[in-house]
Image (cartoon, rainbow, N blue to C red; front, side, top):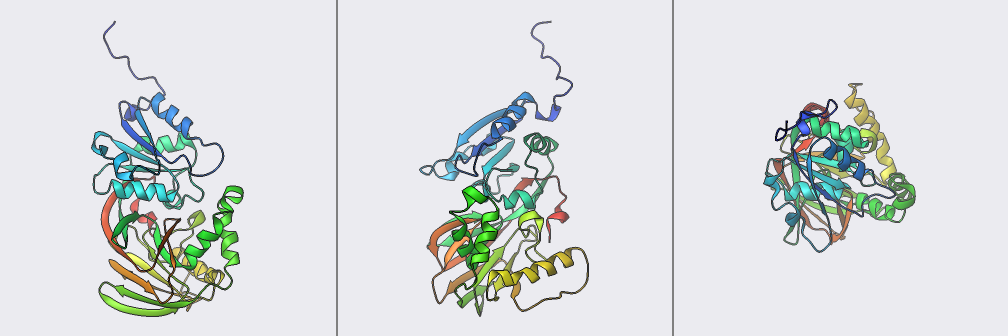
Length: 320
């Protein structure tokens, strides 16, 4: 009979029907052919209405999500910088965000245990399970930006800088190769203000972590939670990044409840809601894998429960 809406096909996920999806993508993320068109095809085949917007350097991220409330889901397709930037632009607007892994390392997607396969990602979006997580806000010379994973100054930023020319050929392995070259990183005196309290230490860097897992979901250190309203501030005291490997082993042992730490002294961790970082020698900054021209000093502030991420995991599985 004409004029009636046909029933959904047997293989059509009913929860996708008429779902409004805003897909914002970075065309420069990753390398090689992207499966993003297949992801869009599957969404539309399931009945979703997909609007695509391409990022460009001349348009602020906020403009791409100015009408976010019109949509049921925001898909941020790119590297970690793209995902965290869009999460920050849409903070506290209660629209679920899918961190589509289209970059090199995709650490945010790895923390959320998101698959790379387009059909499986459609399944995550269809299921609709979300967790509300904190975001970080970093301020440099009055300009504010957001990060979901971590911000840092010192050796980690130098490692990312060293990986830039290697990523196209080696992908995520570029970060490991760069770390191995950081045998004698610059050491300096860092001046911190942690929740209003001054602190000073000698070291090679400072990392301010919200999400706590590196590649392959290995914990950077223990006791990092992206939903407790606090950062874990990591003071890097080791002589070089490779000397932090034993601390990674300790973190894995803690995750598996295998006993007390075997190694100590290479780093120290603090909890904080606000952090100010300065250094005797200016250091480059990175947040969520993006190297920035700004140098220390900078400020970071936690934004509790600022974003709802789509993930197949329960909230507790995101803690290290």
